[in-house]
Each structure stands twice: as C-alpha cells, then as structure tokens.
Image (cartoon, rainbow, N blue to C red):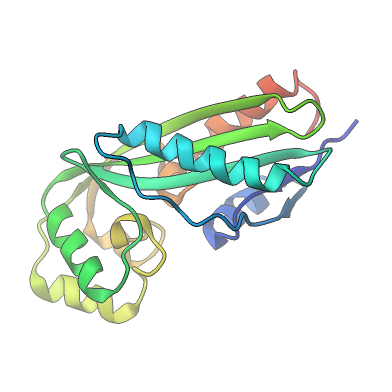
Length: 194
C-alpha cells in the first residue's frame, strides 16, 4: 500500500527538495500563527514545538496519509533568529552572523493520519560566515533574497557567498534535512513504501 505524504508547508525550498527525491506528496500549508520562543526555551525544543503545531493543525482534518511539519531557525549564542520582519531586521541578523559560527536547526514532526502515531526530531548544522562588510550586506539586501528566510539568508542562493564552511546537512540549512526525515518516515511506517 502506498502512503501519501502531506507537506504542511508552502516553502518553495522544501517543495523543491521533495520533488528532487521523487516523492509523491501534496502541499497543505498550516495556517498557524508562528509563535515566539518562550523565555528560556531551548532552540531545538522550540523548533520541534513549532513543527508539531504545524503538523497537528494540518492533521486535524485528515484520516490518512502522513503529515510532515517543519520549522527552521538560526541560533547564535543562545539567541533564536527566525525570519526577519523587514530590511532593518535582516541587516541586524546578518551583522550578528558576520564572522561567526551559528547553528541552523530544523525541527520536524511526522504524524500518521491513520493511527495518529507521531515522531518528532531535529537536525542541527553548524554554519560559519566570513566577515561581512556593510557593502556586502547592503548588496545582498537589495536582492530581496533575505525575505522569508530564517537568519535572513539562503544557502542555495546568493547568500552562499557569505559561507566559509558548514558542518552537517546542507539540505537542513535549506529547511528540510531529507536523510533524517526519510529515516523517520520509514521508522514510523515500518518500512511501508512511501
């Protein structure tokens, strides 16, 4: 029996990764208002909590398929960076990341629509930015690529010019750690074909 995968996100990057994997999936974005971290909340716990909220919201109206909810954040020195709310916010984020190592964390939750079984996990990738000049930042902001991106940059776009190195999963930095997610899907479905 073939099980339908439902992505609880309309992220073009996540859709692109799933398409590259040749998976049969449907997009049903969650309509939750993304919460802020609670005081003292662990960044990994926060990403997993938001991913679970997204998957749960979409799963409420479904009786079959597996629902995948995800949330990607950037963490530096204990500070959680989500998506910038404008150019000034993006500039501040990029200045903060300049010349430093940060962590990209993707929390993901998978819910089996038939029996409501759930798996929630996360993937962490370390990313080192080169030191950025103000001119580098302003040129990047002019491109508009920062919009709707955790930490205000896209590794798969022009933002790759800022990166000295990464340690961990490249696709995680794009927002979908596919190897980890595929393993979790197989575990949840007990090797059932997806």
